[in-house]
Length: 232
Image (spheres, rainbow, N blue to C red):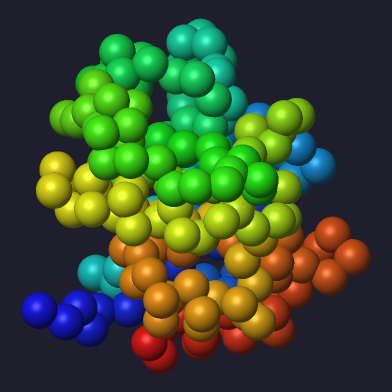
């Protein structure tokens, strides 16, 4: 059966209310706010201000983008403090968080959980299905999506570089078998997202630096990226 639904779009690393107001009308499923170490890091208070813009978009029954908080190995009290200020819909975990921790996040905060899988830029061969199952089967039931991203030794992700996309199919097969979404990040931009979608058809794509100019979110690039994804 041919899948015809376009992948969802996640724009990550938002910091500006003005930029968010300029893009929130686009068909974007998720807006990401970074709480991990990053030049795109926001305070809980700033995230709350931005999330309020999303909630305004959702009045009168309109569908709004979901607010995603990006973390790397957060402590329980850190999450509790941030979510008490910023009402996130999704917690995205980019570290070595265990299945037990992912389940605790879901149960405690009533949010969805996205778990990142870091793939080295120099990975020579795709993993075997058995290796992927051994890695990810423990997370069945405790995560809502798996996000493939390029490994970054400092930040865990957000490197702005792609990984070897031929790794995608084995993860995609696992995700479809267990019923979770597969998202792809890492070095995506308007110029290469067409190739990714046409070749691998992930459930969603995640972009940050690829829609920036001089480190600032670029509305024209965001619009072009969204258009290239949603026309597929």
